[in-house]
Amino acid sequence: MERANQQQYLDGLQFVRWVRRDRQDHPIEPDAGLDLSSTEKELFELAAAVDHCRACPLGETRRHAVFGAGSASADWLFVGEAPGAEEDRRGLPFVGRAGQLLNAMISALGLERDQTYIANVLKCRPPDNRDPLGEEVRSCEKHLHRQIELLQPRLIIALGRFAAQSLLKSSLPIGKLRGRRHLYEPFGIPLVATYHPAYLLRSPLEKRKAWSDLRLAKTVLS
Ligand code: URA
Image (cartoon, rainbow, N blue to C red; front, side):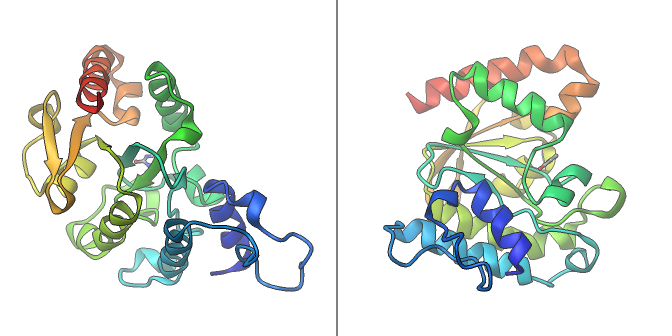
């Protein structure tokens, strides 16, 4: 992984406290003397693989791959669509305007953002924020699948149509997928789909439904 990307990834995963900052001449890596869980080590290796991935052309046009961020032992996994401009610049998910609304949704659940884990279906930004193409989703979703396998969250919140359709292998519109409990079949993890925060910024009247989805999610988890 490129050095700058490693630091971003480690910051996102709150690995900072484990990283040796005294060895500026060496690539940053988790300090071998410290006690990283095997999940954290494997997430780091997966992030490095994603950073090198050129399985689709987005690997050439993006600035940073955006692997994901949060606690490796989180109960809640939020999955969005793809990085936008700000995420591409910083290498972290949901750090733009939609991210501010996602933070508010997380607070409404009584959680801190760093108690959750946040990832996207696509790890690289589609140019000009266009919709992901089918072949991009197909070539990237193996990374998310492995990420979920490592994280083993207790609940997945799919944010918007792309995340919901990709995780549920469905072509139904988000309006039909939201509002009920599903399973992420490969690992039998409960999943609730809701509207994407960027859509809610454009259509604030739909926030009521999103809040009802979050209440449902809390019930599913308890
Ligand atoms: N929208 C997404 O779907 N993901 C991000 O990380 C940011 C905006």
